[in-house]
Length: 66
View 1 (cartoon, rainbow, N blue to C red):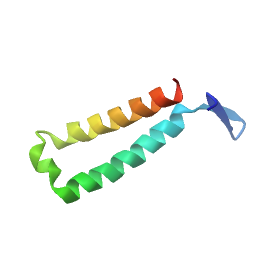
View 2 (cartoon, rainbow, N blue to C red):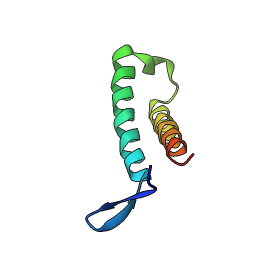
View 3 (cartoon, rainbow, N blue to C red):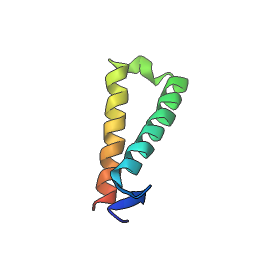
View 4 (cartoon, helix red, strand yellow):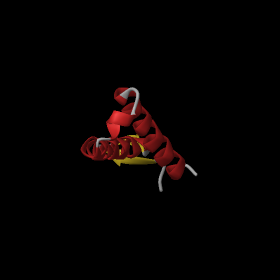
């Protein structure tokens, strides 16, 4: 996968796509956790959401730049 791509004549890093994919994945997982009632088991839901986003973004970034 290329390290950057052209978007309107500007080179944009591939991590932008990973950021967008992680944000969408976090939204999907957030809805699923809320539907299942998993947030009752979590101490601080906002921190948990941020951690899920961080794990997804780091995983995608490592997958792209391996």
